[in-house]
Amino acid sequence: MKLLATQSVHSGVFHDQHGAVMPPIYATSTFAQPAPGQHTGYEYSRSGNPTRHALESAIAELEGGTRGYAFASGLAASATVLEGLSTSATRANSSPPIRTKRPRLPITRWAMEQK
Image 1: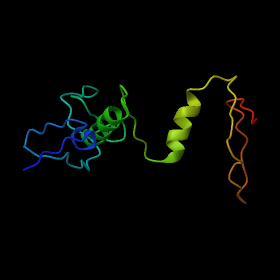
Image 2: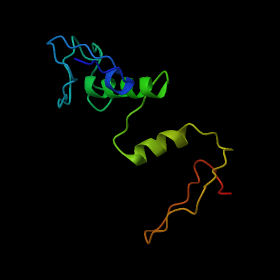
Image 3: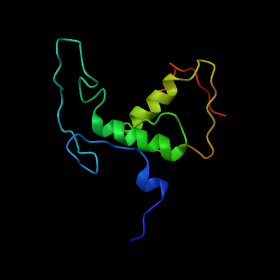
Image 4: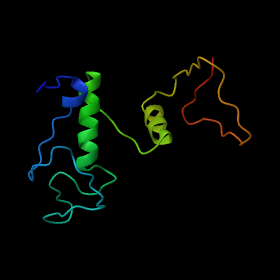
C-alpha cells in the first residue's frame, strides 16, 4: 500500500479522544463550564470550537503561517482586515470596483482613499 505524503492530507494534526480520524462537526452553541466565566478551552461556538480550530490549524500549516483564521462570511473577513489598518491607510484596487445598483456607504471610519 502506497502512503500519501502530501501536506494537504496530513496538515492540521487532529487527536480525538474517541478515535475519530477526521474532526467531527460540533453543532453545539455552548460548552459546559465548571463555573460561570471559567471555560476549559471553548465557551461559545461563535467565539471558537474544536471544528473551527482544526480548520484554522490546517490552513496555517498549509500556508506556512503561525495562525490561520476562518470567518463565517466575506464581510466578516473584510471587516477584520479593515480594523487592523491605521487611519492613514491607502486602499488600492487592481481593477475597477464591482458596480451595483445598491447604495454605497462611504468608508469614513478608516479614512481610506482610492488610488
